[in-house]
Image (tube, rainbow, N blue to C red):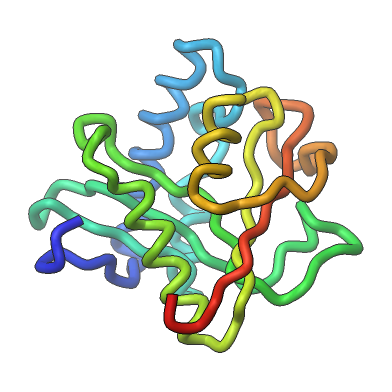
Length: 173
């Protein structure tokens, strides 16, 4: 992500593009035997509600082309249950397929870390499909530590189990 094109807060008007990008990635996952996301399970109306709350961030290569998106929330009891605590929870980190290999994922994770620290929170958390060793290894290389494996919340589909991961953040890092 060049410095000239930072992540910006998404608006409800971006919801259709975000949902379409997620569906594109879900279709790719299903086609490659990865049971993490399913096409159509995350409708634009839900994304619009979340964007209204300021939870989504996007980066566009141009005015019309959505390059990447990520959702940040501060609590996540659906996934973390009794271990839920204030943290920068990363959800829906997406990079358009045509932008793979440009290190955008790690730059988005750093954006999320900076945003989380700016709020005075020193922990990032996320979840990934337990049966996706490539993604688990990727997040491990980004400094996330596996905390535990658990059932996928019932409102989601695609995989049965997720691994919960967290990363301590140091101010100034």
